[in-house]
Amino acid sequence: MALPTLLRSARPPCCRGFVLPLALSGSALLLLSSLSLQTLAMHQLQRSRHRLERVSRADAFLSAAMQFAQRSGAAQACLLPWPSQKWNQPLLCPGADPRLLQAGSAEGLQWSLEAWQPQGHRGQLTLRLPQRGVATVPLAITAAGAQLQEAV
Image 1 (cartoon, one colour):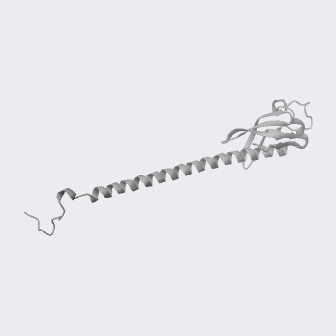
Image 2 (cartoon, one colour; image 1 turned 90 degrees about the vertical axis):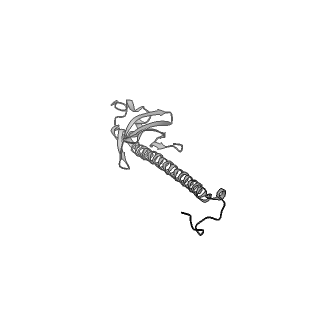
Image 3 (spheres, rainbow, N blue to C red; image 1 turned 90 degrees about the horizontal axis):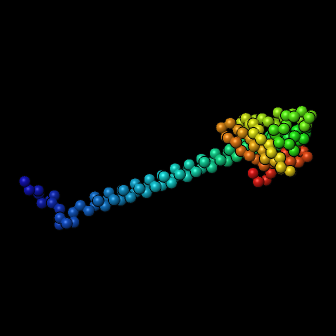
């Protein structure tokens, strides 16, 4: 049965069907572009989360170091020239309570002293925070106690 002349294409057979491949190619290009943008956005989100975690961790350790520095004043200041391993010797600083410098709570996080290593008028404070790990913070030693240094 022959098709009516109204439904037959006026184009020659060599020029028929170019719109569908063109549309498919355009759609594939748009799909790849949107996937690339989505991947870029997800990568940026991951970097932002990592940066936030790093800053949050540093802030938690600095808060714990500040509390250590505050507690290191008064009677505990005489402990600072000595490594933390020697603090429990009774004749070292009779009026000091080393337990005040060995553990505490800052920003709702418990911290514990891993080590204190004095080096002249400075010292290296190593703290442990649960779920945050261990970090070392440089402190300055003054007559009033320990103080945070500028470069952390």
